[in-house]
Every structure is written in C-alpha cells, then in structure tokens.
Length: 154
Image 1 (cartoon, rainbow, N blue to C red):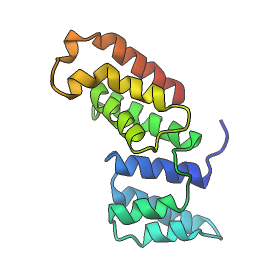
Image 2: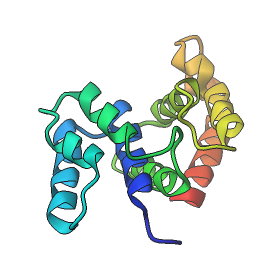
Image 3: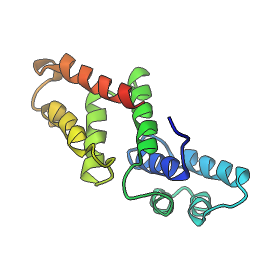
Image 4: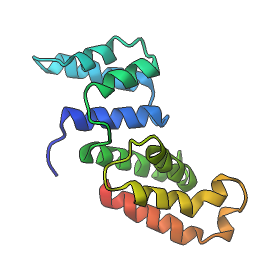
C-alpha cells in the first residue's frame, strides 16, 4: 500500500466526522498534529484547527483539502474503522450498511464503488425500515459478504 496523502487523510476524516464515527475533537487533534509536524501548512488544516469544534466548519475546511469523493487511501481508512467498530460491537452490520448507503446518497462514495455500496443497503433495507427482522433474511450471507468486502479494503 502506498503512503497516505493529505487528501487521503482529509477525505477519511470528513467521511468519518459526517458519519458520526468520530467527534470534532479528534479531527482538530489531527490538524493540530499536522501543523506541528509540517513546515508548510495548507489553509484548510489551519481552518480545521480554528473551527471551534463546529462540524460544518470542519467539514468545509476538510473540503478544501481533498477531492469531491473519498480517495482510495481515505476509503481504506474508513473501511478499517467500520471493521474495527463491528469487531468491538459499537456498530452492527445494518448500521454499517446505512453508513455506506449514506456515502452513496451524499455523492461522497469512492469512485467506482457506488453500486457495490448501494448493494449492501439493499441487503439490509427491510431491516433498516423495521419491516423484517434480520433473522428472516439471509442475514449470515449478507453479513459474511459485508465482512469480506470491508476486510478486503481495510
């Protein structure tokens, strides 16, 4: 795997922040560390640091640093975080499917993965709507496919 770029990290932090997976303080700490480490600091990093913890200001500042979609490196970080949260029990597969679909709806999904991310939502759609318990669907198959997908990227 290649080294992460600023765009990779910014796209990850933006997706994770807007998905509710991390809090503003974590993003600000990342920006502050970046400022301390680098001689030349882009305005977007400074704006994150000075955001006052306001999510919209942080998201806008991160938007100055990265492309319109999650980069491949940013996606790998995001998939790894989802996988970690699934392992430690803080996210369930249906919640992960909803987060992936949210990336598609917000047009922030990594390029080329939109359809695959949408498919995970289809797997869990009835559960998300509360119409069918997960056990009545092919839950093990859906969860297994989701796990294999995240594992392949993380």
